[in-house]
Image (cartoon, rainbow, N blue to C red; front, side, top):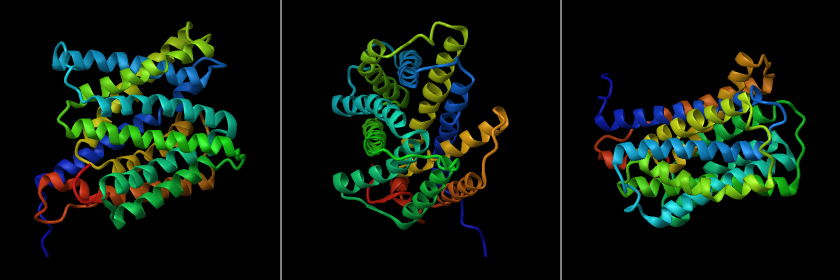
Length: 317
């Protein structure tokens, strides 16, 4: 029996999957970086500063690649929705963590994002999930839950859970709005620069009501620079390159590699020891991601139909 030929569509899909997984790995450096930053940082303003620095870097890249006035022809509604979703995610997620803890807040926010993305795709675009995406998402969400709840000290606050769900919904909205810009032919660097600029502007009031005392220090500047460049500007450029070729539902599931990365970095850099549940959780996340990454488009399917073979049946998002 001969192996199935590797088509251009397969190569493009695998490359897109690797882009998203690389982005998720960079997302996973955020917690370790914050742990190595200044003491007594305000997580809310850390998130806002991260978006502002990232937007600045992305704007510089977009200006260099697309010239002056690159933003004038951008579709307005996806841009506005995506930018507000970026800001809403920051506000909802950190408020959720304050009320119900890191573990529960992370599980609900990250775990609900793929479900929200799939649901929005079904109701807005009339496309239905395919079984492989459902199974991979269940595995990855279960694994992420075990990782986040591995410490066993989680507490549940109803308002905190609602806020975390708001964060998950915001991430889904950001993903689908970004996909709309990319599908309209917008350059990926320009799309990310525009969306994050709107998000940064929406977060300006944060600087007035929260403390920035951590920022004007050596470690504070270093933390802001790292978070703005690596897990924001670079990571979301990679994210956009993958999102251009994959459906939003698949992309949000693939980004569940983030908590597994955080556990590995915590062990290697901070000397943390993950418990048995976290190890099992990492295995489940890995199983779900391998299932998605190994999915091949059906023979004869045109390249533009890649998305439907990975997460949602029908036309690409």
